[in-house]
Image (cartoon, rainbow over all chains, first blue to last red; front, side, top):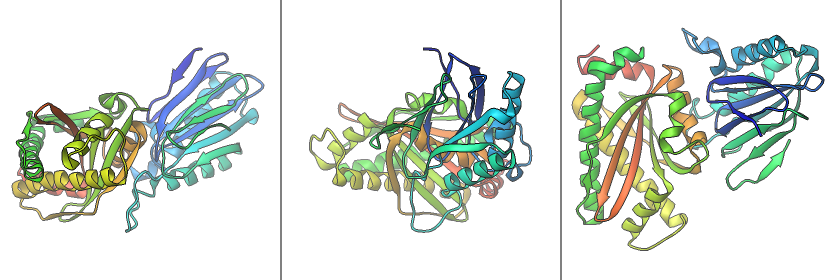
Amino acid sequence: MDMIKVGMADLKVVKAPKMLTTLGLGSCVGIALYDKINKIAGLVHIMLPSSDEIKKNQNKAKFADTGVILLVENMIKEGADKTNLTAKVVGGSQMFSFKKNNSILKIGERNVLATKKKLQELNIQIVSEDTGGNYGRTIQLNTKDGSLLVKTIGHGTKII
Amino acid sequence: MDSENFNSTILDVLKEIGNIGSGNAATALANMLSKRVNMNVPKVKIIEFKDVPMIVGGEEKLVVGIYLNLRDDVKGNILFLLDMESAINLVNLLLNKKVKELDDISISALSEVGNIVASSYVNSLSALTGLKVKISVPSLAIDMAGAILSVPAIQFGLISDHVLLIETIFKEGENFVKGKLFLLPDIDSYKKILSNLGVL
């Protein structure tokens, strides 16, 4: 099995039979896009909701807004058709909890919201998601059928 | 803040904070255990995001993370990270028993150590800068390294593509405890620290 790893603030596009994985998603969000007709898959591992929060944005894959756009562009370059794309969204946990609210700790939730907003703007349907909670997740995107394996420590394994 | 600025004077100052802090932490641990605790010279590094999980043995490695908020003159966070072996060694030293897994009492003991260690570094930061810093009650998580490290990585992600790490090994007899501490002041506090140290 040819498994391509996507790091933090990173994105990759592959064609079947190659597969994509990103390990240990916490408050970050993994966005898996899939073109089932052309069997092209893309995965981005974003860290922050919006590129507006930072002045010099060198890495587009770091943010939900710019990351999703860049991923779609790269998939189209590889031969995907935008109208075929569907999305799966995973991650956005709150790993630590405190009594007092802290915006940085709510970042997981904000990452998920920003991701959904951007996907909606681009008219890409979210077919499934596994978000929130207080635990980490590893995901594997199968390019043959677009299925997404979600692994955790102590919170089970599932395919979404 | 770019990484090149980081690498010279600032790094030296941060190293000093790391050294003094680790010394304080070793003394505090020794008092708590009533045993002699040695430590190595702490390694202070500025590393890139993508290399962060590698230093703890991969994104999926099970680790213990203890997270605290900083308040007053310096705002931000501290993350103290232990690999499972070190966490269990530390619990066995503290509770004077031989556990193989972490139970509730172990977790509470580890949180307390996190508190003491974080205080040691914060006191050193405070002493060197003259800034008043307080820490919150710790929050502890046991999970994949990648997931736990995403929290400080995100926090530093607003400032740069690099994170600051202080790595210390505490040693009591045959027992090693490898601790990794991430000091994460927010951007304004960061400037305040550097300006009080006379490097900005």
